[in-house]
Image (spheres, rainbow, N blue to C red):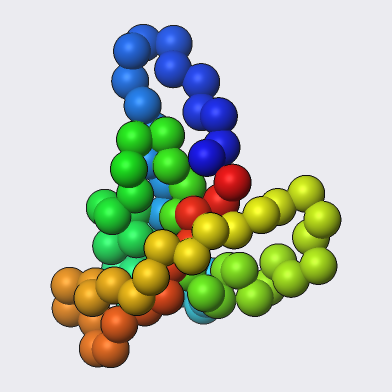
Length: 87
């Protein structure tokens, strides 16, 4: 897992997905935002989880290693999504 500093005794959880967002005023919305939020909810303390989309976009990045975390049902999203933790 990525080392995520904890200065206040809190641990971060991160979920990352990539895609096109919809801008509404000063906010972003759309299915991409929903997927990222669902992925984040599945991350453990001090863990970074990404979708297969992100893993594929980062192919060839020598500094990153991914561990398969399996297919997960994401609330409100059709079909399971393959997730990976970033090591």
